[in-house]
Image 1 (tube, rainbow, N blue to C red):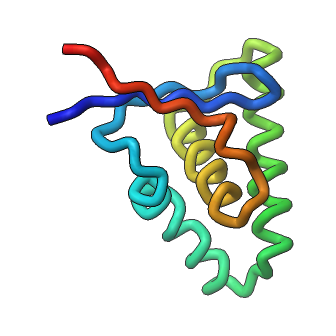
Image 2 (image 1 turned 90 degrees about the vertical axis):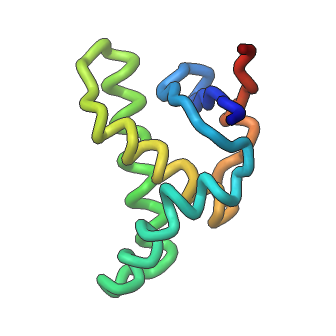
Length: 104
């Protein structure tokens, strides 16, 4: 099975690193962010509200990283989910995500 490592950056600061088993951005979105967007609609949140909420959360995690605060693993996974939700909604560039195939 192929193994990959994903790196997410925010303002040129590495925020997230995780191992993956695919390099397909659509599959990663389905696994991590699809439910997030759907639950937002079920809770009567508009697209604009969801976008601003995701951006605020990502900025808070970025500030915690820059100021050397500890960040929980669950918050990093939520950051990743927010990133791919914003990517799906055409709000962030995929240039902030690097997926590298690992050598064996």
